[in-house]
Image (cartoon, rainbow, N blue to C red; front, side, top):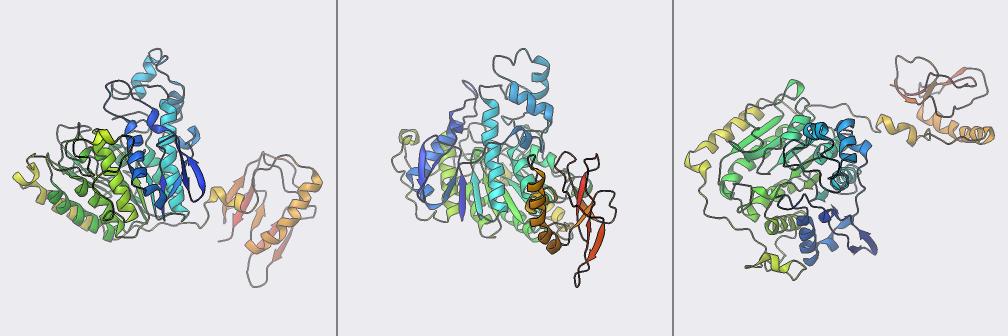
Length: 490
């Protein structure tokens, strides 16, 4: 199943009898003359709709990411700044502006926080749908903003939705592979996971006197993450053939060695030929080859947007890659159907982004062979996929699953009645209830301010025949500072 989380157009769209209205992320603007155009998402949406693709998948309206959700990666101070800054107040916040919005590339435009919450919410929702098993592939073309750092904006990116999405995936999947085919190095994502072996980052990017200036093959990761940051620096003008000659073997080796449980692919479209900022020379089909190549592995896949500054080519590429995700790329007409932005696609009016006459510098100096060998050698040194101890139910949500959520104040009779209903389930799960220190169990705490469970009997122990579990009932529990612990038996 393909789930498309497209926060693109404010128009209603009917899918399986349900009307979905998606958030209008395309209505925001970075300012007059800025190269980043959120409007490209509207154009993509219109083109995909004209091809009838949205009727072939589940289209969902993603939740907006809350400030609390964003602080899973970003600092509280930075999120508070984004939440409060406006074009009118930014000059008065000079100190914070120079700390958080580095350079002129990242303006405090009108609605910047809402824009970020839509983008980040789409990627988090995409990860949630994938992790729940509700989808095999999820798409958020409004995401992929890979330069944002923990406490500052960079490269047109304010909130790193990719990191937030991967963190959500890690709650379910032991290993996540992140692949970046944007023209610019995915520095923000690499930096976030530089010291862990649970996330492997692999970036194919232009390197040299080019933003952000990072991503050499010496950047391997650190500590437990050493060897799990893979960089493939490229030179100007790389063609489809040259790109495939390095992408395919490197990703093949990664899939064999790292064995990811899920894959996140950032499909930055500034690596296409003719981009206003990019300097690579990929065609639409060469760019989409990455989606097709990963799809054959049948691993849960998240597709995200990213860079891309020639709007009509961005829309073409992401529309075609949506078709690749659906497996219908051979069925769609290369002649564009009529849509609201039809005149934008002249003079050819076709679903194609051809290569231009740039010289492939990667072939000219034969540097690509060496780069490929260095990357493969790095991966060869990783003996096997790292093992991760996982729990079936994350500890933070076990209480909710068993009914020990935070309740409103209830009467004594209601509370005792609720408790009576829980006794049987407690016996079944072999839980142990404590009110004091526990050293030999895995435990999570019910906060002190939660209503206490009252059991009007003296402490006793009951051994369950055939299970070997012990159930300890606590005496009437008066409110105290020590939280009640619910412990799972080893």
